[in-house]
Length: 269
Image (cartoon, helix red, strand yellow):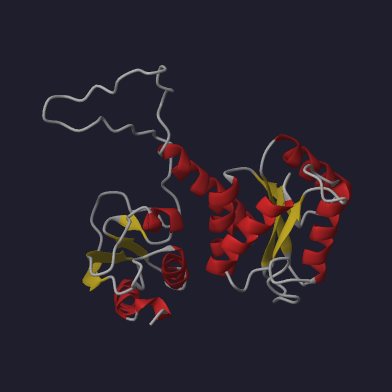
């Protein structure tokens, strides 16, 4: 068994594991490798391709991956599938197992897997991990145009203006989302990005894990620090100054901890 096949052979009983179902063994393994960078303690298993190494899906491959997760001590297993028949295969295995600990999450395969891994790393149960997949997928949807542009259609930009922005109201407010307007006590700090390559995936995931340990809503330049995709979407570069805000019971401790983590480059120095 390689590091790509499973990140750990035994986990705490309450941990949630992930199985990535794909038509391609290389794709499933690659996404596992990516997600593992953000969640080193989560059991991640690829279930890609067929038993004879062809493109396709296999009931037995998926079933073995789930069994290995449960044998490793996972209290629950969340499956993600790439397209079409991969989802059908995952559903068939789950139906045959009749085990309430095993569920299939619908959503973006790569972004959902990363978000799910981070949620599991911070102690999320099956329901919370599934919710993280859905939340990440809605954020991906925000980047899509409302309607596909006609072929070769020019983008009309007002004189002296910018291309119009498309906003889709997909109900992203939820755990970790900015509070609704109103009176709230807020702790504020500023911090500087110290990481040589900016706030890329690994330090961004470390930030999300850190924020998850406090009873507080933390914003970095207005983006929810509880959302990996929101943080990475800021595109923060080395030397850039950011504003930090925290509200909630642990706001003071949270904002100090986050500021200190920025100063320490999230352990990369």
